[in-house]
Image (cartoon, rainbow, N blue to C red; front, side, top):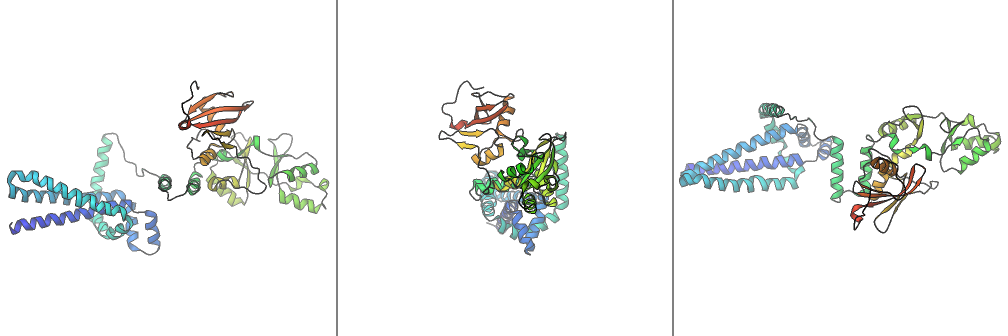
Length: 429
């Protein structure tokens, strides 16, 4: 072997090392945790700041690494081919292809990427300064290539959006992934998911409907109003005149107690109108995130929900919104009415008014809740009719059997996952 051949082989090995660096850097930087880099940067780690800047311009980062990696791989293959042709003649092309393929795949791709994926944060901090220099040097070339690629894609009717995945989708995907891997408990996943859902849900999705809303008649004698307020499990109660939809005020339990104390304990002497608080009406299309902010700004816990015509649809409280995050909040005065009763055969008996979101949380199901708030509403929406008791429907991977109905309301259903049915029921609508 001549000195020239030895130098060429040494150059090939050096290029393979550089290729391994590029491959490992690409994997490490794309897999690095942006949240951890942010925390390290806040702690004073300058290299974490470099990683964060590189990840903000991910297309330029990937472009620089791909250019560098392909450049050294092609150069190494060309040099190796020249050596093998000199040693074996025309057959050297085939030998060079086999040898370089094995070397590149094992030592320049699989090995560095395997190490990088298991040590992504540590390796990304190590390679960040060199990669930043490479991105700066190849910046003009990368920009030209990106412009060319986008132009070619547009010729074929395709376009590349700036952000393919939103921040919420990325967070939700990370939460679900960690839950499947066992790193995040089911309850924690639901709490984190509840926070992300606040911007997507509206007040109408969680409000207490007016048919279930407890209210008092302001024209009743004060003693009767006091008795009904004390018998209620709620601290705040809306009062109406002439008709239940005509809400004239909200009675707070503490205000009522102070008024009773001021009247010497004689409820008949109370002027209920004087202690009523002004009702606060909010549109049913208000997002939960906006409503939570409004509750905090007004230092209020209670609001009445109205539709576009100004008709009262129900009420919403601060506790209702918090329960979307942390789950059911019960105290010693709450009425226990779960409405979901799992059966030994795998089916679940459900009250018609149970929200779809609550059923999904309790049973770890994935029924859609975009078109209907309650499970009865979901059945009516899918069936496109008001079913009768005994009718059954199959959709979204579940069998829904209507058990009871009161006038036009479905009051009870049996919901069974199709996986629990053996054999499947026949003759369903």
